Structure formats: structure tokens, C-alpha cells
Image (cartoon, rainbow, N blue to C red):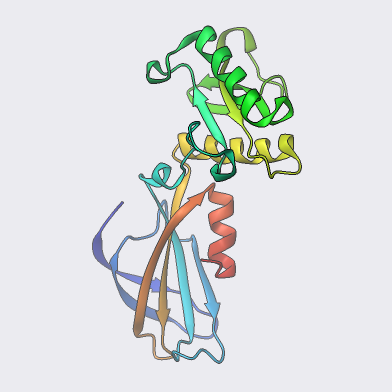
Length: 210
């Protein structure tokens, strides 16, 4: 994350504002800036100017449940990757964990997870999608257990594994927003993290959903 001071020109319809930015600056280039015109803002702001900055610590926002806790407390489910020696490693350890999770939440809520590793990594329910070079680049090495209150376990698992894929590959973002008065002076700046997937972060920045 870049923390420097620069002068950044924000193009607002009908104006041409230049304001001092102290903190993270846009990346990878200056075109990815979104401006919202504010009306009837109680703080007197006229514009909100937002951009994205890569968050190298975004993975810290994603926490898997502890298998020793009540499954109802697993916000993101309970996940283990048995390529990692920390979790025992190997097919035998994976299968033992799978059986434990089935006992905890039922067979329809526990999935073997494929890992496609070819430069980047992709996680999905085992045999639920096509991967090239499955023989060499895919391993059914993980287990995901879904919380008991989820109504569609497979769909929920697909969503959380998509998010985990983004986290593992560093597709995590901060939204930086400057609130400007009508004369272009900066009243406030906020930086909010926890966004996985650039497409999600962009939509939130454009809509002011931060």
C-alpha cells in the first residue's frame, strides 16, 4: 500500500477540482476514480470521490470457524486444507476430518473441495466444475463444512469458496473516499477494507456502499 502525499485531479461533472491527497493513491492507474454528487448532506459535503487500493492484509478479514466451536458460530463455515502440514496433511487426515464434520452438521453440509493450482489457485466443490489438466493440477485436498442454519448448502459453499479464492490470490481491496465541500476542499477521508474481488469492490465504490 502506498502512503505518500500527491496532488490528485478529480474530474467532477461541471467542475475541475484539484485536491491534496495524503494516504493511499489509486492503482493501477488514475482512471479508476468514481465520483458521487451528494445532495442534502448533513455535513455539507458536495462530492464523494472514491478509488481502490490493493489490501495486502485482506486475508485477515476472512476467518474460518473452529471445529471445536458450536457450528452455529461458523460465520464462514469450517474449512481445512490438507496440503498444509499444520492440519496433518494427506488423504487419511482429510477423510478423518470429513467424518468429524459429517457427524457435526450432517453429510449434506460437508464438501470435499478441489484445489486447482496453476500459478494462481481456485477452490470449488469437488467435481462441480471443469478444470484443464485435472490429472496434474487439481487435488481434492480440502474440506468445507457449512453452518447448520444455511438453507442451500451447495450454493452457499460455492459463494464462500469464490470469496476464499479471491482472498488466497490477493484479490482484496480497500476503498478510499474523500468527502469534498463545494469549493473542492477536503472535509474528511476514510479508508475501509474487507472487500474481496475487484468487481465487488468497484460496485461498492461506485454506489457509496462502504
